[in-house]
Image 1 (cartoon, one colour):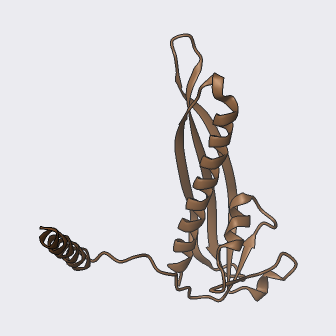
Image 2 (cartoon, rainbow, N blue to C red; image 1 turned 90 degrees about the vertical axis):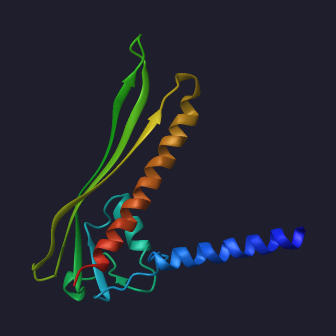
Length: 166
């Protein structure tokens, strides 16, 4: 009996693997960039710009703040980085019960000479968070974690968009 269930499990695993391979599923690998040097402006910039500088690894050299822009092949201008917190739910007595957190990043990609490689674009991330006045410290910590998660998502989207620049 055990041998039959083990054989069934192995067969189902093999079938699932074939089905995933046949549908075109592929794990996301490392990005291939058409440039080797990048400048991120403004210096030092907000939290997204700082995390972006650390996220390239050895694939792309990000210029230091004191290096001239003309050494870069591509310049990423972070035009605006904005964090928002709005009330989206209240109870019958008017007390806040739910917030919506947003991070909005506007950017453009250009050459050091000013040729536009990608027009002004915007990435928006938003998350909803419940609120309870008896657990204010826990909710503040949850808010910080949600902002950090959204920031990481935005950085990953920026890296994928930069990989598509030719």
